[in-house]
Structure formats: structure tokens, C-alpha cells
Amino acid sequence: MKDLLANIENWAHHNQPFALATVIQTWGSSPRPVGSAMIVSKEMELAGSVSGGCVEGAVIREAIPLIEQGVSKRLAFGVADEDAWAVGLSCGGKMQVFLERFLAFDERTEERAAWEKLRHCLQHNEPCILLTRLQDGPGHHTLVLPDGSSQGQAAGPQLLAAALQAYGERRHQVAEVEGDPYFIQIFPRRSRMIIIGAAHITVDLVQLASLYDFETIVIDPRGVFANKTQFTAPPDQLFVQYPAEVLPGFELDAYTYAVILSHDPKIDDNALHLLLPSQVAYIGALGSKKTQAKRVARLQAAGFSEQAISRIHAPIGLDINAKTPREIAMSVMGEIIKVKNAYL
View: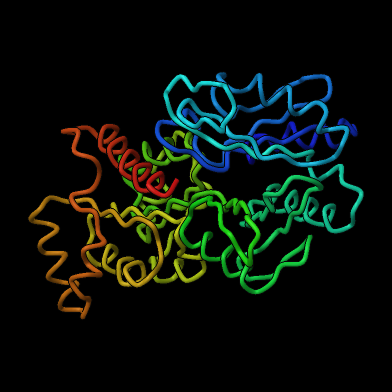
């Protein structure tokens, strides 16, 4: 839904009611992942996709009367399920779609509160979890924040716990809580890449990370590198300080990816001592196998366990026989995307 925010806000602002279709479950080779969304207006204007074309027509037919009625409906598609809709997926998989009039057009205070908080979070890059009760009839939504607070429909402790667990797992999911089915949709903040060391590889990596919508943070206490490096795409933030002076100011969580590139053990280890005990999703360190062996010895001497040290991806990046800084940056970006998408 996040990629449809501009359309959603525009249609909502102009009081143009529409339906939201969301992929909530898939089996086999479904063409679109869980969480994919499409919006449909009464005039049959479309944005987004739930299948790449093979079930959109059926979804649109269901959406038009639903917009007027202001209700929700769970739809099933597949070729092998006799109880599902008679619409075949070209890939042979199965999927479920939840179709609902968008909550911004609901007159109930709780639904409007959930929408306003969701809109605020998406606009300001703040993480949140949207809970949608999967039952035919009027919509039922709760917007939960990582601190456990919520807006919208009332949510009991079990439902809040399920939402926070899904947030920690980084995975959209369907869960049954106290007898009711819910779709738990995760809206994390923008992925963050922290790069220790400003070098040739850093220039290309920052450019690639920006292309894939990562927030980029470059840290290097060596002013000659940090201030003199010519970035094609400038990082979002640049710090001419040691990592230990900067990293405590950031949330080192599961949506953060750290890349160690300085070639200086004093700087690299300064960062690793804070990153290894953290919850960051990825830690990669530049250097040969010999360099990594020396790094491991230093970390062991500092008291880090083998399990903690094993979190480091080194040599860094996917093995594509990279030679140039640009190729190395590509291999690192590929490895980070691989880790990030393992949770989708």
C-alpha cells in the first residue's frame, strides 16, 4: 500500500470513494507477494496490482458494488481449489485477496482515527502495523505502533502481542486471535544502510542504496576521506566522527543494514563492538579471508562469542567475481537485498 500513497491521498482528498484489494495469503507460485495491493474507484480507475493481470478483472467486478455498500469481502483464486473462484492463475498458484471499501470513507470515528494515524506514519517514515479483521461486512481496523500504543478499533492484549510479534518477524501474515482472523500488515520505516568508511566503493554503494530507497548514513572520522569524497548521490547523513560517537543515536533494529568499509581496524572494530550485540539485519565487512581471520581474532580477544562473530558477512557481498569498486558495490547491494527479501 505504501507505493500507492500518492494515489490514495489524492482520491481521498477529492472524496472519490474506492476499494482496496490486498493479497493476504498465497500458495505455490503466486505472481504477487503477500501485501501487494490495488485500488479501484467507482469509475474503474486503477492503481497497483494484485496478480499482474490474471485476476484483476474479477476483483474489479466485485469492487464496484462493494464501494457503495461500504463492506468487505474475502476472495479466493486458484486452479486447484474447487471452492475457489473459477479464475486460473497463469503460474498455477493460489491466492486470497481481501477487498474492502477504503477506511478513509468510513463514517465511524474509530476507522477514521486508524486512517489518520496510518497516513501520518506513511508520510513521515514512521513504522506501524495495520490490523484488518478478515470478516465480511463493515471494515474493522486497528493501527498499532511499535511501542504498543494503538488507534482505531479497540485491540486486546493478545491482538497487540500478535501485531508486535509480526513486526519483529518482518512478515505480513494472517493470524487468528481470540477466534477472529486478522491480516497483520507491516509498514516499517524506510530501510537504513549505515556505511562505515568513505571510499570509492562507498560512492557507488550510496548511489545503489538510494536507487533502492534506502536511507544512507556514512560515518568516517577521517576528514580527508569524509569531506573530500565526491558522491554521485550524496548520502542522507554524513558524520566525521568515530562510529561509537554516532551509532548510539540510531535505532539499530531489524530494518538496519551495516557495511564496514574503512580498512582501518580502529574504525571497523569501533563499529563492530556496537553492531554485533544489536538487532541489525545485516553486518558486512570488506576484506580478504586473511583480513577476516585477523578481525575474528581481535573480536574474540575482546570477548565476543563465535555466534556473535558469525553474524559478519565476510568476505562481503555475493560471489560474482567482482573486481572494480562499482562491481563490489553491486555485490554488496545484492547480498543486502537477498537478506532483506528473505523476510517477505
